[in-house]
Length: 258
Image 1 (cartoon, one colour):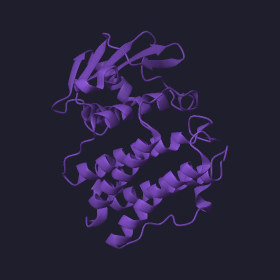
Image 2: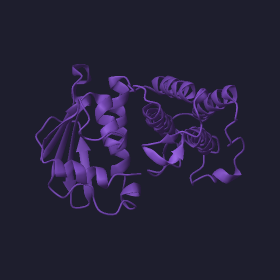
Image 3: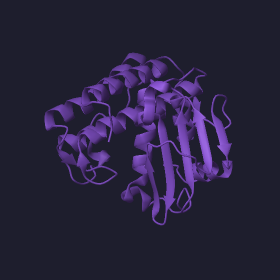
Image 4: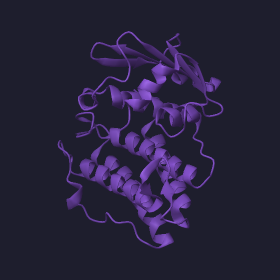
């Protein structure tokens, strides 16, 4: 469940895509992305634009099975700067248009099973934001999200990881049965939405918005917590504080790559 409204996701997707487009517009497309070491900046941008078009196609077709991306058109990013910007923004706009046309409650295929089409607005918003972070960090620039959007990114990530469809593919559980991990965002305005308690179960893990002690606690601004949990920043990053058994967090991070 999310407190962010559909129109807010649509706006956030457009905004994050615009920021990414500006970041990649005039930069060296051959620049290596340290947080995605097999990718260059150009490949990262193309990945995001392709993801937008693929998600839009799933919604447009009201597909209940994965869509073959190889059969989709307009999947190559232009080489010129203006073309890159236009192509990225067009992909994000297509996602929004598809959901508006189909209806946000229409059920379609997702990685987490059949879900309302609105799943893809949320997923593409956070996919774009994280890859924008990859680009900004590679370019030596600061990255920041609104506390609300960053907190929602953490919640969405936990929800995805807890999905039975993804858990089946993840191998060893990221947290052992009976172990608890607590995250606390330092922005007071988030309230309970800025608290996460993850607890291991015999079949994987569950999470909830709750303030409680765990074997490990992680505290910091929501954007910093998001980037640590998404393995974009080390847990030793300034501003992020790890309390208790850091090995619990290390295990979590080791087993939650995606």
